Image 1 (cartoon, rainbow over the protein chains, first blue to last red):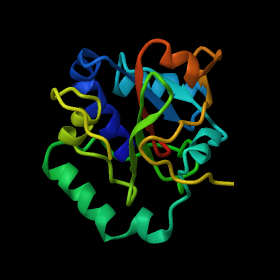
Image 2 (spheres, chains in turn green, red; image 1 turned 45 degrees about the horizontal axis):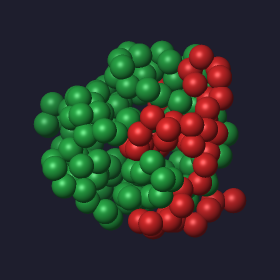
Image 3 (cartoon, each protein chain N blue to C red; image 1 turned 90 degrees about the vertical axis):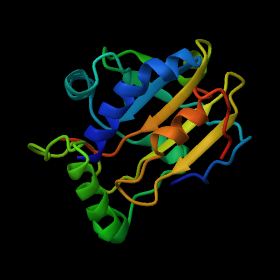
Image 4 (cartoon, chains in turn brown, orange; image 1 turned 30 degrees about the vertical axis):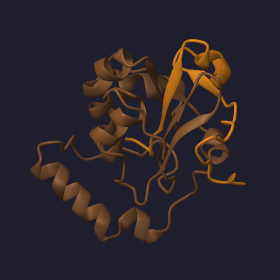
Length: 146
Length: 45
């Protein structure tokens, strides 16, 4: 469910992110046809790319999660918060696409190829909040480097 | 093999991704169009 919420959020923030001069590049572990369907339904206009082997995840230091990171109390709490906040995007339907143990992450890469923001999720539902994400791309007039 | 965690200021690994149309593209090519917010999602379904 968190990937659905994250995609919907990116679609909502897309105008501000792009106005700041950044482009959104979403990476999934799906095959092209699966990714096109999933992103097209959840976040039309957000560019999604595929890496079924998760090679790029590993290149960015994104590991497979442990039981606590994937199923622990923090994950349940985040899910409950999403549901109560009206951000619940529905339970998964059908067979999961990609490695269910793979942890997510968010980065900002500058034009010179350097990392200006790196966020390694502490658990499956952990992504930078809106303010942090917008700061990271300079959409609030300031750049944050973490 | 998982690589080391990246820090601010590190050179980003130049990854190759597949578009939903099946064509390949590298991060370096994407960066020619401006800086990139790179979001790695979990599995979906």
